[in-house]
Length: 424
Image (cartoon, rainbow, N blue to C red):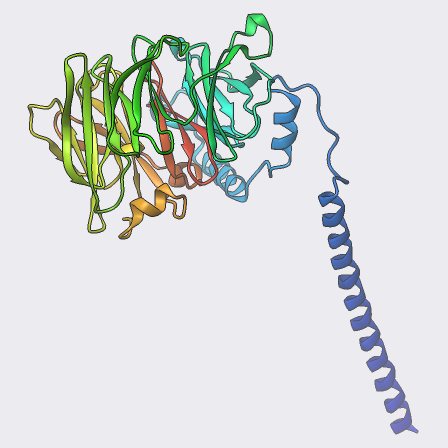
């Protein structure tokens, strides 16, 4: 009898365990199916938050950004760690540590940006969305955005801003088209006085007097360097080049510097164009990249040879170059207004052989830290590490310095989003 009772007891326990296992499996099965249904509905536009119609930056911008996770995990962890440190150290406002100004980072736009430029007096930063061609303005003190135009320009490849005028380059069907227009908030939210420039413009440079230089690379013809008024009128052919693949830079006030697009271990040249003629400034340098100061003869140039990146500073064409203790591209650098100090983003990990070609094609990316460079002495000092300070890895490209030297705007090459670095 006891043996029968034990058998029944164990049988019931076994049945209960099996039922619990089945119920547990059923719960997770339903949960998985529910998640799949939710993702499907989201893909069809359902279960989205109600669109907002009150953003000064515009409804399109706000609703696109709302679809991006607003608080990355690294930001939650970073903010929590800071809160814990403040709690246990009893950090007070006004302390000596707090009085020391530190560099700070602001993620201005999560959406891809085609071009940007600072306004006067270091108060605003204008930029152009790559997806729409809309012009937005970031207010640096309040860290807020407002939309300046809502004229949609599709297929934007690159854009340039010259004060209240924009140059927007698009490509469709293999044809590169550039339009220029006036951005004047007082006249409304449309691009005013819009007109088309020549086709196949590949590079635009703005000079201190607001005149522009651009290069036309029309298929089957030699490239032509053209100078024009700030609005693109009165174009004048400056010189003709023998090969394609050149970029125009502003240099030494209103001079033009033409730089060959770089490639690893391939000799590059930089040619200065002045009213008196054309002369080579840098020649036969492998993987040549160049950064100029628009109002002086100061320049930075980098080389890429046998897998090694090197960076140099040069005061003018007569003085010897100084090798800097950095391994980065000149395209990741920008001059301060004084023409002596420069700020460079250096990869934290030394790039491998063939890096230059892969980076320009967008096949590889770096995690950069910011360095302050004294180009006269040939020294460099680390002053900001985005990964350490803010927990974010940034691949810096197209850095732009503000007029007063207080800010650097740049794109993250990984996604073309816009960032602002406030200098200490």
